[in-house]
Amino acid sequence: MGHSSERSSLVGDLVRFLFPSDYFNPKKVDEAYSEQLDCLRNVGFKVSIISLEVLASGSAKIFPTPEQGETLIYRGWMITPDDYSCLVNVVKDAGADVLISDDAYLATHYLPNWYPLIRDSTPETRFFSIDDDLEHGLRELGWSRFFIKDYVKSLKTSVGSIIDEPSAIRTVVAEMQKFRGTIEGGLCVRQVEDFIAETERRYFVVYGKPFAALPDEEVPAIVEECAKRINSQFFAVDVVERRDGCKRVVEIGNGQVSDLVGWTAERFATVWAERS
Image 1: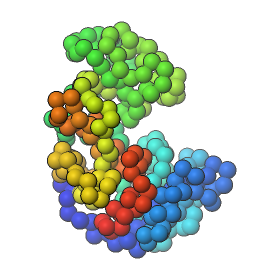
Image 2: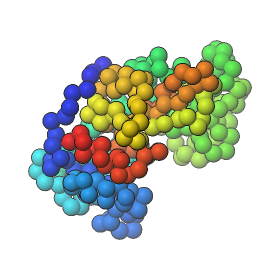
Image 3: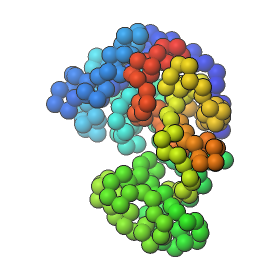
C-alpha cells in the first residue's frame, strides 16, 4: 500500500491529455469529449487524439504527435487491459510516457485490486470465477440480497444487477454475457446495503489530493482516507450515504475512464491546472 499525497513534480507544459478520436474522422475528437478537450486546452494543456478502433492493429497514431519527454494522460472510453497496453506502447514509441502505467490502470479499474485497501469503507464483497458453482457460493454467504457485477461494470439493463435469490445468478450472468458481450475478469458479489441513491457523489483524486465537483464543497473524510490508502495519481471515488447516515464508498474507478458525473468540464480542467 503506497501513499501518494505529495504533490507531483510534473509541470503543465510537460503534460498532454489524450482523447479518443471520432469514429469516422481520426483527426477529430470524439464528440462526447470535445468539451473536456476545449476546457483543458483553455487552461493551458496540450491535447491530442488517438483512434481507439485501430489500437490493436499496431498502426494507431497520436495526432498531434507528442513532444519528447511529455507525460500523457488518457481521457476517454473504458478500454480493455490489452488495448490499454497498446495505447501505452504507442505513447512510448512516440518518445513520451504515460502518467498511468498498465499495472496502475488495473489497480483502480478492477474491483479486486482496490477492495482490500478500503475494505472497511465499502460493502462486503466476494470474488468468483465464471466457472465456479455460483449458486452454491451465494447460498453459503447467507446474505439476503446480492449485487452482481464483473470486475468493472454491473448489468444496468434487463434483469438488473441486484438479486435476492441465489438461483437468479444464472440469469444475471447469462444476461451480462448477452448485453456486455463478455465478462471482464470475473464476478464480484457485493452485499446490498440500504443506500439513499440520490446522495451518491463522485470525487476525483489528482496527485494524492481529493476534489469535489464544486469548489466550495467539502470533501468527506472517507474520500480523504481513500486518497491516503490508494497509491494512484488519478482516480475517482463514488460515495453514497446509507440510511443510517454513514457514508460508504460504492466504487473506485481509474480516473482516465471515469465520467464527469456531477462535474462540469470547466471544474475538471481547473482542478488539473491547480495540481500541475
